[in-house]
Length: 308
Image 1 (cartoon, one colour):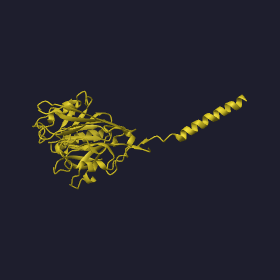
Image 2 (cartoon, rainbow, N blue to C red):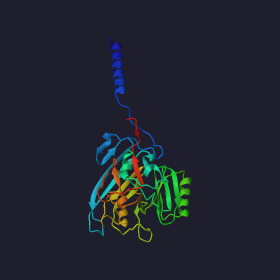
Image 3 (tube, helix red, strand yellow):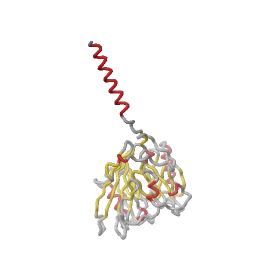
Image 4 (spheres, one colour):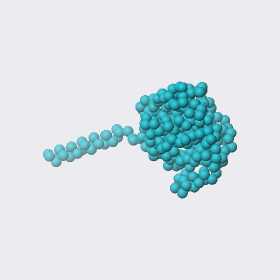
């Protein structure tokens, strides 16, 4: 009798375990995304939006904050927004071009590009398809141009998702950096030519008219920058502006490393500002100042979750 009771108990436990196994939904799987620019992020889970400013799934977590600040040398308060982004795989940091084609000079509206990407968060890039016969351009592992002229800083994002840079890149200094990356077994996935570098090795950089060509560091303007905070951890910092309001370029680095923003920032790089400035969550532009002009490319962060 006792033996039968034990057998019955064991059978009951097994039935419960089997029922639990089949009733439990399959766990979501995180898979690297192909480099191909025409491949976008995975569809976002509606339940991943914790709020309109925060998204999280097994592969990515982003949260946006905002605050009104009054920068030095400004008569106006400006709205600053910053997004903290953590991903699980480097391929989730991606770029796209208008019409997915570097040879086509036409620009696109940022929201039209973002709508196709399944992006969690996206921002504009540099002047990638503007008519400058200079600079270093790489998108999703494809090198489109290698003509540094010593006037522009270059930001490189490698296959491990790490940022490195070359200030006022020339053919020689850029090649030196590329050789260094190759020796370390790294591949260039994306490269941007604009800048300047705002934060280097955790320190805000001195920015003057003399060392930054036409980027008007003393002009109050709407601006945006991309940052690396740690391993597969990034930030985007955006400042509203227009009609003489905004932030001066040399102040951006100081604001980025504030305790309430990104005090752990390793590298911050200025992107195209003014009417090109676009910060989008879930494909929607989050700031209202200045009309957004058509641009030639986006940087975006995507989900890599499949199987939900």
